[in-house]
Image 1 (cartoon, rainbow, N blue to C red):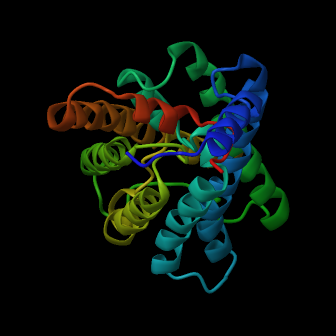
Image 2: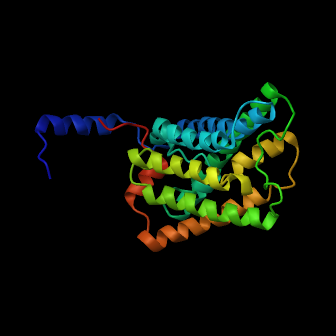
Image 3: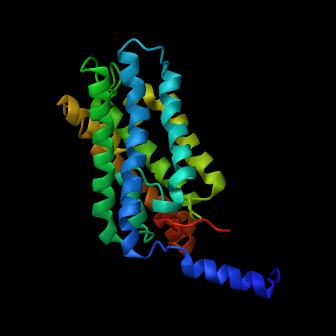
Length: 259
């Protein structure tokens, strides 16, 4: 282990004492705001691509699939150290089920995520009008509901495994893991979007359904991701065992940056 000079050690200790800790409940409002704002931006990109396409915008399927992946990557870099950048109720539940996140904080996170998602869908409705599906996720043409459900289960299991598997520090994961998670979201959308919409996120799917008042396919995008999330937690437990301290820091954030 590299020796640290006495002045440097004192500086680090002072910084540690001054830096707000993610264990301090007084900062919970910052984390909830981060989750609401981050989910707003994610749904704005994910549902917005479809909404703009419905308005005649030149948005290709590849663009629509890539946009949420790039947004997730940017948000993890930008606010992962504050809240862990869950941006998805299933991710919050998965972190809690694995022991990385306190169950008492789960309701607040999920509420913040849904508020952000609904806010994004409402913004799209006000800005672009009621034409089209408002970027809703629905099974593709000719795709049965059970096939769409199966895809959402498998895709979400993979997403949760990638997130938990790369959780190794603040920013939800570490510098390279933002690329892994964002890349997974984009890749899933590129090949599976025409089948189920590749939502993997109940907040992302329910928000447009709520604003447009159509819940016929909504259950697929709640049940599928929830089952897939549990499978993802199980896969990670098989591969790596119980949760560690680094995973807890990744899930909860630090509210400070290392110097």
